[in-house]
Structure formats: C-alpha cells, structure tokens
Image (cartoon, rainbow, N blue to C red; front, side, top):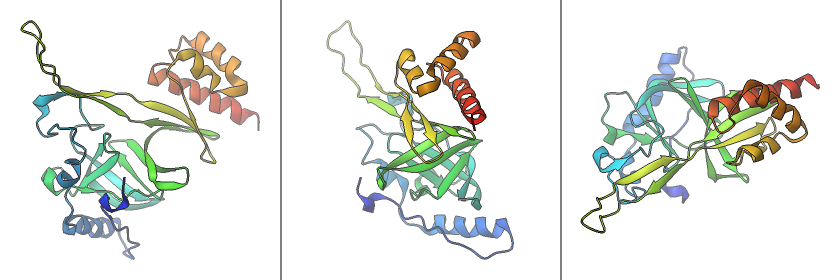
Length: 244
C-alpha cells in the first residue's frame, strides 16, 4: 500500500488537566478531517458493496458494527468512548466520534507502533513487518505473559459471487471467511507463527514441545481451537518463566 492512501491521524501531546479535555481535542480532530472511509473502502471492495450486507456472507470486518472503545498512545489515553471498527480486509482501524455518527464520517487511524486501541475489551496493536510500518499490520492481543505474548492476526479470505451454471444450480453470493493466524511473540518482538496442523503447532514450542504435548493430552485440548491453544501458550509461558 502506498503511504498516501492512509489518513494521517495527528496524535498530539495535549497539556490539559483532565482526560476528558484530551478526548474532546482528539474528537474535534476526527471531525475536522476531510478524508472519509468510504473513499478508501471502494479501492478494496472486491466488487462488493460492504453496506449491502444481503449481497454477501460473512463480514469484511472483525465486527460488522462499530463498538465503543479507547485509543491510547503507549500508556496515555488519547480518546475514550469513541466508535471503532477493525476492517480486516483492508487491515485498517476505522474510527468515528460516537456510535450515532454516520459511518460516512468515519476516519482511518494512523498506523503507529505507539498507538493501540481497546474495543469492547479486545486489544489491537499495530506491529511493523521487517522494520517497515507500511508492511506492518494489526494484531489482536489474546494474552500477555511474562516471557511470551499470544497474538491473533484476523485474516479474511474472499470468495467472489458465482452465477448459476445450469437450471439446477443457484447463484452463490460472495463470501468473507475467517482464516485467523496465531503467533507466539517474544518480548523482543520476534514472531513464531502457528501452522494449521495440530502436530506442527506443537513444534512451535521448541524445547518444551514434549512437555506441552503431555499437557495437551492430559487436559484434552484441541490446538486447532483458539481457547485451547491459548491455554497451551499460557502454560508454556508459565514453565518458561519458572526456569529463570
């Protein structure tokens, strides 16, 4: 993606005595910015109108509706109770002043490793790839441990609509299908991707793979299920921390 397609969401250090004043200032910036989200989405719509939800199955978003959340820069709260939505197809974070603000007035949050959001309890961070922000992406934080973190990359696979090929077949609508990818991440920022197969997932735990394999068997875990893979990562982080 070219840098000039991103909305430059200016993050300011505002010397105000209250969080509310900071939030109001950020919200005013959101309102005054001219770049609207529909102009961006049209470049990535795959021939599908995102607003016409009856024309496709699934959703291009992590959640199809805007939810209230907060925007942070490191530990500083920049905006609270703004409406946020993660566009997984475009890998963009959409933001508007409130739930009732028209979607056409939504803006795109600048991609920065220093800025993260909390949406209805879910944390999304932006991480660069190979040192470059433009090649980076958003990850959902599922667990933060003492030695390792557990991240989820929300990926959408798009299947275009198909016309019926005979009188006994029917049209098939376009579809967005979830294809999440999970990672163990070291505190130094090194990413280890979990493969799709259960047996290969175990290998990601390195020297602890036999210990994790035993734990998975004892607990009856299915590593192809997110909640069970998370339990294995939490246990892995615990035993790695105990070694120190």
